[in-house]
Length: 74
Image (cartoon, rainbow, N blue to C red):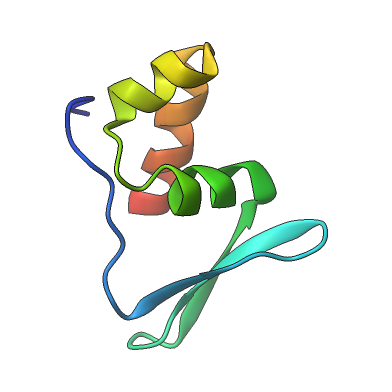
């Protein structure tokens, strides 16, 4: 995975924050994907940053962030 790229959802995918977990709704495919609230904040709040920027900002292991984004891609 290229860490210098931005992560963007398609326009037909909507991210909704819940109390305990969030969800990505794919309106075109009529599917949904549960995600942790931490990932919601990465998608919504850090949408103008590259994956490498996000890893540096949160001072965390790149494994966790890459694993989240791979989960969404699949």
